[in-house]
Image (cartoon, rainbow, N blue to C red):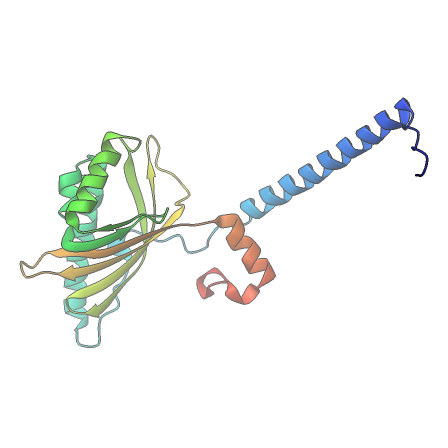
Length: 213
């Protein structure tokens, strides 16, 4: 058995701990600074506009005049949806969805049916989203048919001042039902991960959308 190594002298041990501590702090500062730089340079160019300012893309079987008329009705329906949220009125909010609508949140929770959506939002409005409002900015309105449209937007919830940065991206699929009202048949909400997005654009520039180049 080899002889045991004598322990380091105490001054050397203190010096080694100090060096390791400084190295760890340096790495933390570099990592934190890098994260802050990525976050600060991850702004999007296409931030959206009010719904009524977005020109609709008509379906092949639809005249542009009809598309513009339906566009106004869709913007009205979405404005009414936002107003219902701002009042924290779950029943009114739920009525903007079809009976069999689907609703996927940014955390991945998936609701099926108007009743499911309404009950869940009543709980949210009674809980941690009490008093919250919706901020939204629209990216596109595209008709798949005279009775079906896909709307994309940026949005966020807020209390107090309206946020400058809308951290979520949403897709609405709306249908015009037999009573002539436009309602949401499917909704999907995604949380934008700005730093991860920035890293992916640096590592693979071709993944950057045309609108952000």
